[in-house]
Length: 108
Image (cartoon, helix red, strand yellow):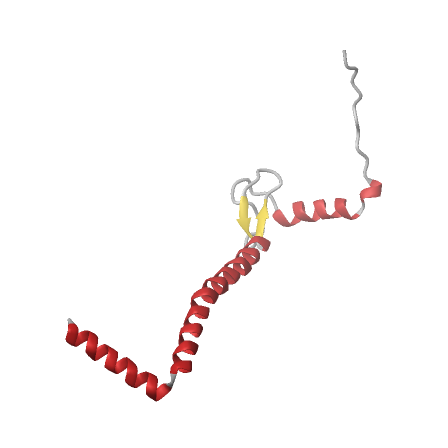
């Protein structure tokens, strides 16, 4: 055990004398930066991919089935997804022309 400790200490002292103490501090600092920044990079990639997938999702207005943007018709009920989405967007474009009927009820 003492021979291994002595050998590693001697190798460490030789490396410090050759490369310098600053080199080892920079190496340790860079490794710590990588340990903290790689998970942040993975998180950013996951968020971007989730938002991309979220924009391609279509929901059927008749039955509520969720499908990807590849299909033009609903898999369950066969409704046309493009027409139902365009009708709802037309309604949103002209809110002043729509009327909402309210039924008044007496409270007893």
